[in-house]
Length: 97
Image (cartoon, rainbow, N blue to C red; front, side):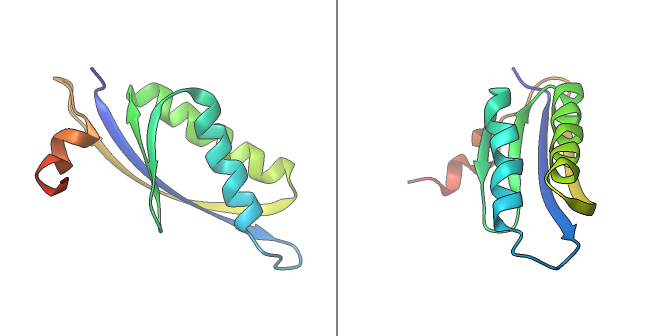
């Protein structure tokens, strides 16, 4: 079972203030390629897995933004670390129909 939930919002700054949606899409594709369970929400994406792996994914997301031409990247992260195990479903099951 996963020991962490990590929510991440990535905000790339581009030189000419271009639309950042393609950058966000690319960041999400980094998560998708990793194989971890994740959910995309309007303001952030939440991943489920081992904390060290999730932090490595965030690093890859930031590197991808720079490779695409971003000048810098602001990354906001929320972490729930629970060594005995945690899942997104555990926290949201009462809200699911």
